Image (cartoon, rainbow, N blue to C red; front, side):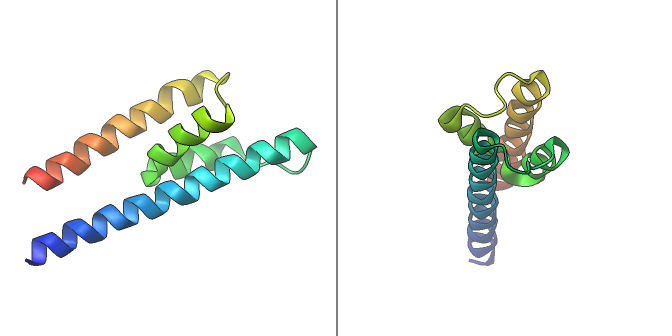
Length: 93
């Protein structure tokens, strides 16, 4: 039963970080359209790398944000594959 709650906590944390990342990408896209102060690219990639890859991918698709940048087109899906592999490896173990 303890493993169940640990897995549930991990899923909730991953979902929360993904949601936060999705919102950050959306806010940054809005700022880009209005010419406001932007979120640095290193920060967008860092939060994607630290667990927000699903939110980053969704933000890129929904808002068409950072899709022209090669480092985002390649790194964000790579982060997602890594996170997915780690997540499912944890669930199977």
